[in-house]
Amino acid sequence: MEIDPFIFRLSIFILSIFVGYYVVWSVTPSLHTPLMSVTNAISSVIIVGAVIAALAGSGEKIFELSNIFGFLAIILAAVNIFGGFLVTQRMLQMYKKKKK
Amino acid sequence: MSANLSAFFYLISGILFILALRGLSSPETSRQGNYFGIAGMAISIIVTFLSVGNFGPGFIYVLIFLVIGGSIGAFIAFRIPMTAMPELVAGFHSLVGLAAVFVAVSAFLKPEAFNLGAVGNIKLASLIEMSLGAAVGAVTFSGSIIAFLKLRGIMSGSPITFKGQHFINLILGLAVLFLIYYLCISQLSNIFWSLIIISFLLGVLIIIPIGGADMPVVISMLNSYSGWAAAGIGFTLENTALIITGALVGSSGAILSYIMCKGMNRSFFNVILGGWGATEQNKDSKNKEQKPVKNGNADDAAFLMKNASSVIIVPGYGMAVAQAQHALREMVDALKKNGVKVSYAIHPVAGRMPGHMNVLLAEANVPYDEVFELEEINNDFANCDVAYVIGANDVTNPVAKTDPQSPIFGMPVLDVEKSKSVLFVKRSLSPGYAGIDNDLFYRDNTLMLFADAKKMTEEIVKSL
View 1 (cartoon, rainbow over the protein chains, first blue to last red):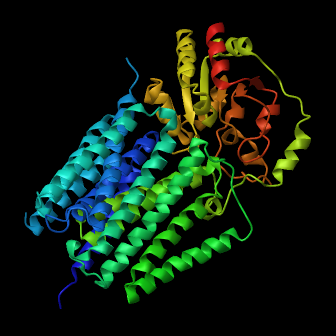
View 2 (view 1 turned 90 degrees about the vertical axis):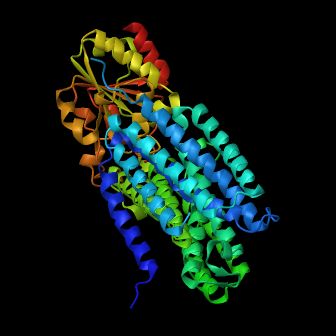
């Protein structure tokens, strides 16, 4: 019997939860705010779905309802991606060690 | 690009995202981690372009919208003051949530484009995944909007409660599950829209009863939700990068919520089911106000600290409100010139989001190796001459250790009272968020400095 590809995806998902669990516990508490902003930025990889939605369909009909939702999602996700990574960068640049 | 090749690249993105979080284990590696994250994102987007392979006029629009959104994001990222970080993160969460809803809607309207079947005949598994993604996304969106409004002060930070609230939430939660079930057997678009609307409503109702100082838990929780929503969509799109990221973000937010709840010694459900705010303890504290307190001024404080050999600073949300972090740093610099050893003690729930105080201190150029977490520094209070409490309250209350009747009993607190003297900067004797009186105010070794945190600190700098 063949295994449903869904099972593979579920395996990836569950293993990733474990990876996330151990990786996040090793994050130093002083960086918890950047952790939130960077997780925010990476969860915007949902833009992948937005791009597929926006580009669905044939050439002439660019602005069908489903495409419009795709374009809107692209804007939202793009705000998050750029905003999230840049604000994280800005924060991380401020963390300095004692000058000796 | 073949599906197998793009799946491989999505896996690489996923790994880069894991490395991005891994980098945050220390400030030195964190910046590199952020670049890994950016690289992962770039790979995902480019691979998607190539695998869709539609470079017609629509593609131009995609780029235009990408640039518009990106510019808005970049503008916000550079302009936002560090004190506003909690509301920024809440705002960003809402965008992820809404984007998840939009992608799910689009997939529902045009399943062929996503390879999920046809309208009215969407594959069952896909339908479950997308409706879960949409529901969680909608809750994330509306919940984050409420959190944003509360943190921004547009909406009152005090808990909004009404009779039967939990019952209504329960009904709505069950309605969501029922609608998902009904959607799966009927495939009706009206059901799909109702599901989204009810989820929006549920998000609002879940967050309104939660008070201002519980926001660290709320933000972490919404962070987690945004991850689960992304994962739901990832399953729909059969996209590894999205599944991995969703799982990472989901568990990250869950761990942060756990850490925050532990910092308050409260269960997750206790926080979610509403605030501490309006307990009877409020009335109790009125009778206690007669107790004598020692009142000091900036000169007294300066004198005490100048002659101390070690000082521990305890910052809290009040420091963020007063924007006192820069003045505080100046004060510490002046003290260091006098040969005083200074360190900072951060309680896990100080501020409005995890790590809030650390970012503000970093902004004021405080080296991170002078800043310590509760467990690292708590034993040092006994050997310290002066504790300078600025804008913190409940997290220093010794009652948490002594009075089993107190609502905060058992909460880990900073042992501030063990230091030889305590300087407590506060505007008045009013109780903190938990609505209970702080025993520390009336101790013999406590000197109250009644003033705005920033002004008081600046005055101390002058008299040093």
